[in-house]
Image (cartoon, rainbow, N blue to C red):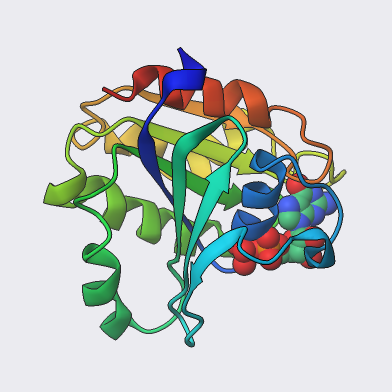
Length: 183
Ligand code: GDP
């Protein structure tokens, strides 16, 4: 049951994909960062290309989100990995409206699903910003990020979910699914 979930989820994706907005939506916030109260983000270490936030969610006091920004220099990848072993589920966020960065997202996703620490961990792929008119459809996004070619690395529970971190559409469904898969 959701209320009893004790899990740490890894929220990954390129910069600007909507990870922070999504985390706030999951927390039950809407609107801008000013609405966040002190203490909601327990640990923030902003550095160029590397950011981790730990967030408590009202879904459950036991649910933590570790947010890792996957953009930027390769050298930060070593750092991201230190957060991998402690997570039970992966939430990969793609900006469905940013067609120019699909290949970059694809590379980042590949790096995540290939990582040995993340093997077999359930993966929720959020195709975010579906509220935007020029957002790709689920099928387009799946194709662009190479889901079809990832079969070898996708030996785990996974799901593609269209969502909007702004309107909240699809977010609950996705998160509930991911939590249901967390062992
Ligand atoms: P992060 O860098 O991955 O944490 O991305 P942010 O959460 O900071 O979002 C980047 C930008 O995209 C901000 O201007 C958000 O308001 C916007 N954004 C995030 N999610 C959505 C969405 O679902 N729909 C729309 N239209 N904009 C979004």
